Each structure stands twice: as C-alpha cells, then as structure tokens.
Image 1 (cartoon, rainbow, N blue to C red):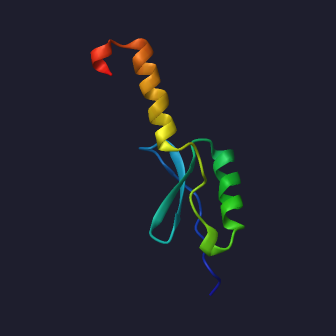
Image 2: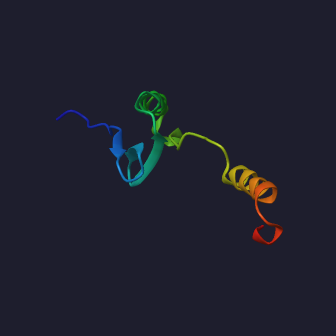
Length: 78
C-alpha cells in the first residue's frame, strides 16, 4: 500500500487553508495558491523540521493594535 501524505484542506469557518501533520493542524494561508506553495515548501523539509510557517509574532500584532487604540480611541479604552 502506498504511503499517504497529508493534503491541504479549506476550513470554511476560518476562511483559511490548513494541513494536518500528525495531530496538529497548521494554518497555511487564506489564498489557495499561497497555501499550496507553503504546503509544498513545508513538505520538502524533513519531518522533524516541519513547523508552522513563521509569520508575524503575536506580540507585534498586539503592539500594533494597542498603538491604533491609543491614536483612535479615548484614553480610558486603552
């Protein structure tokens, strides 16, 4: 029996493409072409090196949000 490989799938509720590696679902992209490019890039790596594609750190996203709140909302909101 040939080996089975995980394939990207679309999660409608998240509006995003994912791939499941073992018990872990890895978010790829909202764009199908970009998701498949990231999938192929991920699958070329040895299994022990496969991790979610690196994106912006959550702390950077939160900092940007707090900066926006400070500029656009009342001071007590921050």
